[in-house]
Length: 472
Image (tube, rainbow, N blue to C red; front, top):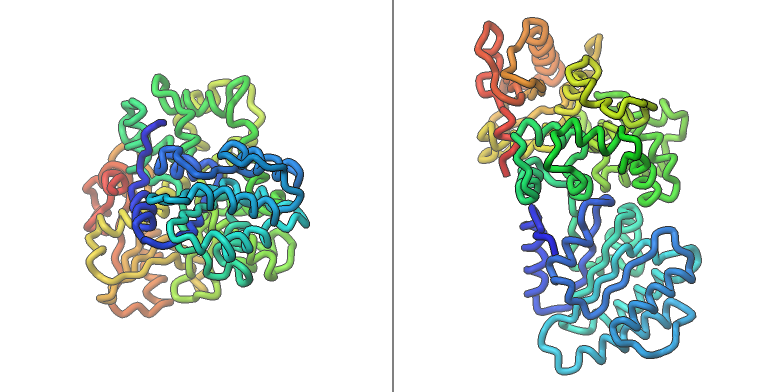
């Protein structure tokens, strides 16, 4: 099996649970294509006492047949079950036989768990009965469930208020790679790209391992993008629709929210989303926003200290690219390479670089040497000034000083022009006036290479570069 990259923390969590000396119920969740199955298979080296996977969009009969076939593969010799209660009883009997005189862990892995839960199938009730009455009583039981339908996992397993309430002993949220992990992954696949190239690829594919696995080390970044999106038979042509339809039952509703957020870089509050889409601002919308946040498609930041008016921004790079360029009907198979340096592409890089920085706030804080002092970070939108001012990242320090981060993408050293300098000064002054911040306000430019020394560079005494973003 291919070497696993960048999942040291998740491996540590699994190792700690393996050594606990008690029965463990592990719930692993994360967006599709992020490598959940690969993580578990790599950790256990495919040595399971039982492994079954749900069938995407399968019927009740299909799901039960898949489960029965897995039982047979691991040694069960009886007839197929007609209900899920019977199926889990068969699994319990199989595991109890395997566990006789066993010294090591009994490892059970149910992959794509939400798929098994077809309408009126009784799957969840049967799983609950299996865990509470049989599996949890086995001290060496190591039970792992995994699913890409993150909203289902959160509501029915992790945050369930009924049968599964507090049953999971550990939850693991598997997120896309950081820039550092992406660089490590590509180096392991013999890529020799400089960091600016890795950054540009990251702006399109994010840190999703499956998308990164499709890149060709013999091609440069523009040619890879053309091959996967704009060639005569692009491999990722329908990936966006497949992605959302595999995650959400009412996928079109979620895609409408993403489409809206893709058009507005500053993001929207929940009430603004409801107004723009002409839908009710109710619990259903709140659930959908939570789902998108759990799947790492959007981020929700407090508007300063106003917790009731959170700002939602799209931070999924693949979705950003899809709505900006993936919906184009182009006949040029070298659309991306031939558009290199155009205003449309440059503007997109500038916007997306901001999202990269927001995904790497921890690295920015460490680069500013603020990780040793208590701090809080958030976005901020003015309530009084006209036109309104928005700051995507404010780092509020315990010593009373607020650091405003300005993100500027550049293919070379960045030279701050007077116009941008004035905008930053206005943002600082507006923030100071409206928040009555007593400790002072500083600015930091976050850019790719370095900040050139000119008349206006003094506004950022400690700039952050791409090198800090690539830190662990």
